[in-house]
Length: 250
Image (tube, rainbow, N blue to C red):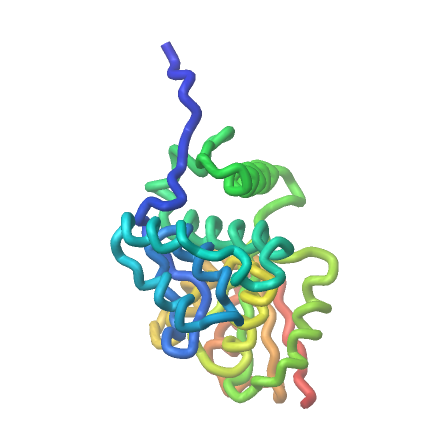
């Protein structure tokens, strides 16, 4: 007889994953659980020291006590507006990094978490993954790279133009400075799930294109000063993937 018990997921369970980049962690910040990410993000732009303090809580009970006492009046003013996208991005990044572990929970219909809003997020992700099996609705994993010296926030307009018709399900980016750093900031500002690759790895471009579906680079000259960006364009052409270089004019 089949069990009638719904699949469940504990957002407080310690299942560490890497999230968005910070000044001292170019490879992305370490989060012990989904709720470490969620609770700490409440204080982004409000209290950075406390945000970091929450991320470093390595005892579940201590973390629950600490976050249970948070004054919700002291969190970021846009919390209600961003929380769904924020939770969704965190859950997606954790799921990607722990697919085998979460296969029987988040990858199942009707997964319950005990938190209504997180239940909604889990249902939304499950629905998106199911639609990805339909022709024309495949997951869009966009690879972004470019010059090492481009750090102008105006580049966000290029990203907005690039994604005006359809947002990516996930962005693939390296830990390089320049364009890659701006990609990190853009993804964080809009809470787009991000996957970070190590540029020092000789096969970094191959890793990014193993599942990457589109490649876009931004550079001043036809050939970027990022060898990774150049390699990505070359591989994308060889593999028949969608690719384009956007010229950058400061």
